[in-house]
Image (cartoon, rainbow, N blue to C red; front, side, top):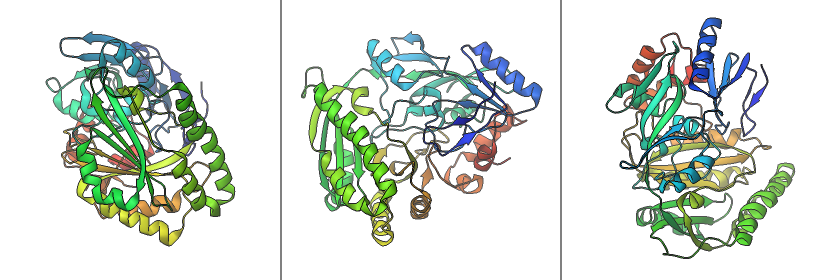
Length: 434
């Protein structure tokens, strides 16, 4: 069957020649063989939370939603084997029931596990890494329909390339994750001044397990979220149900959607609206299971560009971005988000061998993001910015080869496992070359 496919943000669409839904590894192998027999490319669709056209294809679009669930548990080593199509919002409570958790998560849990890993979803925490760094094994269906199991000990080069693999090496059908014992986080959120945050930004990042900052453009207000591990029974209790509904459902979603719809018609009111939005999200403090604190409901649709820059560059980047907002007066109702992640060894991870600050700019999906994204990309380009693979950017193979020391090694693995380029599209060719 065929149908128009659209991503969550609404900025990417495609009309594949064939959409195939599978619920088994054999189904995946059959879809790959079909693509090979027809001589067409195959791309895998997750939940559509990427803002780049990684999935777009006129060939076979493979949906792996039917591959879900925890398949095996190694309690001694705190490892789990998980089907690739498992969404994070199902995986997290399943791990909790086993007394386990992922050490770090992003702030959205709608992605499939394989999609989050393939695009480098990272979360925040200077002593932690992104989700891909927790992957200790992968099983892929290759272009010839064969199965390949890889890890640090078995096919190590394929493993390093495929942990953040952009879907360009094969179809990931299972992942093995190194977990940690389930833990709770003490969350403290407060509004602070932009100047004060910049003056103490590195101390903030170093002093807490996880720090997430939301600066509202055209204002001096930053919502700072500090999350720290606490033991059982320590810290305050969870948010009362009424407060969670008020903050996360009514204010952050329903009211915020209405505000953004209004601003898409009256953009001149954006600065004033941002002042009100920044103060509406007041201070709060609570403790809960880690995944309940990390992840929040994000129903107001937007498009996003995010770059990783070396930690030392975060103050210059934010200072330059603020100066651009003041010069341009560009109406941007969504906050700029700032996070931090430690270095890892994943070849195409934005944090490969580098401690990073992550700066993300967002625009409401009914408003034009082009000026904002172009200005932001020009700023981070001066600071060796590495783009998030799932967020809007324009960088291609030549520049990416300069930013990633193991880029040529990834291409060599690709040449070996997919010489006929079965798992490609125009965007992948732009990223990795032909």
